[in-house]
Image 1 (cartoon, helix red, strand yellow):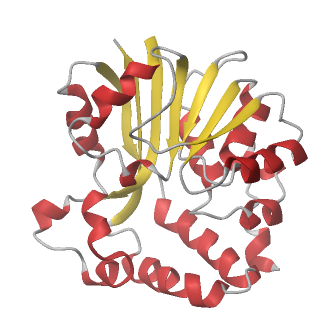
Image 2 (cartoon, one colour):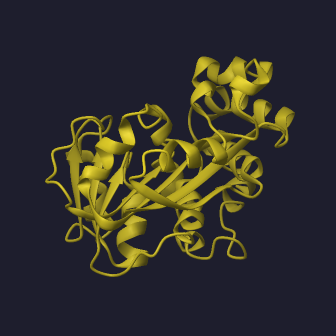
Image 3 (cartoon, helix red, strand yellow):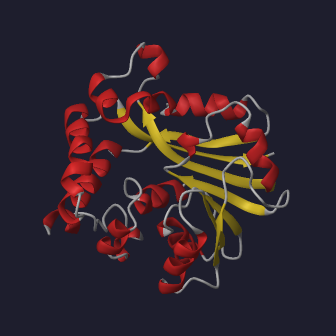
Length: 254
């Protein structure tokens, strides 16, 4: 399975490459979440014993990675995946003592104020985090000086500036692309609140290629892979990084 083997890239993602790519693809809910998290974490200061909220944790791959690689205690919060399903993943991975699954919607988080040292969100923030009032809501749960890190689909230029959604993107994701923003958009959106200091805002290097590698692996091994992932493969092959990327943003609460 050549495409699946391509998910092991120790030169660029040494931590992620220690994980079985078959396990990761089985938990698929979006482009390689461990690559995104490993890259994002370079701009964060995650230390053992920290309490971290994994917001939009999906089936749990990123929460396992956080617990194993950084020694943090994780609350894995997701709306679409039942907590018992995620808990089974954590038990099998041997991190059940460090990761707790919670099923909750991102606007009604059941946590005490200032209860987390860091909040991370991998390929989920675009669904709930672009509203003007969301950052002020979310930072309630961060301790002073706490860190926020987001990896989200991004565009090299704002759809508003383009005046249109590129046709090859629109065919696959439709209107959702209006929530895929540039690093500069996110930096302004967060800094204007004066609640956080943005510590980094960048496009992931060669993000479209990473995404394409992931889509090809899923197309190869998943039962409905070709039907589900071929449109994405076609979109990325046509785009070649002209518009599509991933935006990585980190900040500290003042």
